[in-house]
Length: 527
Image 1: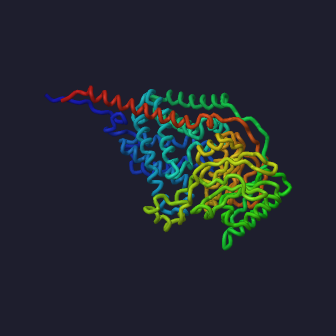
Image 2: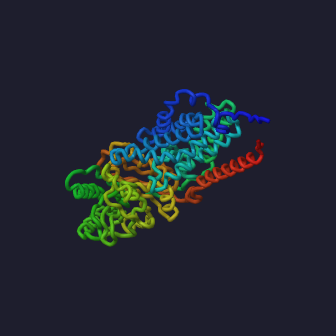
Image 3: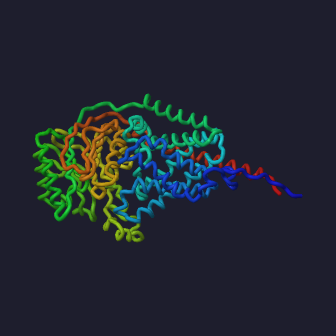
């Protein structure tokens, strides 16, 4: 007797059949379309700063992946879109890494493959309201998983997280104070998922509209409920930005310019003077003349100097980047050695295998050494005596956990020392400066972002910009009255709860899908 089996339906529930719509026609344009669709969200970041685009920018990519005629094609288009996104967000690295940036984007783009399979499974075909409701939770969770893995410092770190594009939006900054940049990213992807359902899934349009309403309700609820930092005085902090100094003797001439700008602050009643990253090129422990010079400068201004030394240490082997506080009597307090280094810029991962990268770009010829702990230091002298500051160096401002730990350890002001001299004419300086607002809102601690050559900025505990921003073409010293705040933000208190909730949702869904598949297998008829 011949047994007939029912034909499988198309879509992710039975992805063997042909799909209709874009997947069936114009297939040769789908691959480049995926790259372009993935790159679109990069326009929400500085320099374009089209922040509103982040709420719709993922929709074309979602519609493309859901319409794929097989899970394999969905995975490929998610991979290409992920590579396009990373390449667009990091395009300013091209002069330094050359063709190597294409390889990195292609490799890291693979992190979006599980997200693409999830989109295809939940939104492909003709899903009902139940599947779309699940997608509103699981698709953002899958996106966060990709961002979380690539945020590992050895894979490039959390530069260009989708939630960071909202650094100018007060409602998003309030969300960040509750759940960090991760919560903002989850809400953005949920809005895009709901819009995709409204546009492409007639059977689940109401579910999509309900998702949009839910996102708006969560944002409004956080805005109404979330506590806010309490004002606690001000600190008068100066930023010294010498600007680009090239050519022979640039280290000496830059130091002369920094000294000149710092002397102009005398009599202005500052509590702290902050220099940028690599502002000092000689280890202070091995250069008594330089120590005396900086100490005299501190006495002239009447405030401590936070300088950044990029040099070979006299007391430890190797080159370190260190934040050093210098007072009237010389270096004081704990020095902070940079812990998280820029891949290829400050060290080459697996140098024995990838050392050839130094021959095709500006990769580090010698690895910098890492510090082993974060430091909160107290200003010992001057008008700012007693103020506790938490230093970060350059790339470290991208990591939300570092600023959160400094705030938990008692820092009243976060101070970032940076330099983007290699990327003056790209998007990097603006993107880097925008992180100050995000970190300040997350921690309820103002952040001073001082650069050697990039964009210097100050943000208060709400994430609002304080005073003028110093652009890439500026060589000046600027004084800011920085509002201090007290209290502990929900994010500092509770940590990365949004990450754990998203991962728990994915684990539960995977467990349910596995159990459902097991039940179907046991119940299926045999020939």
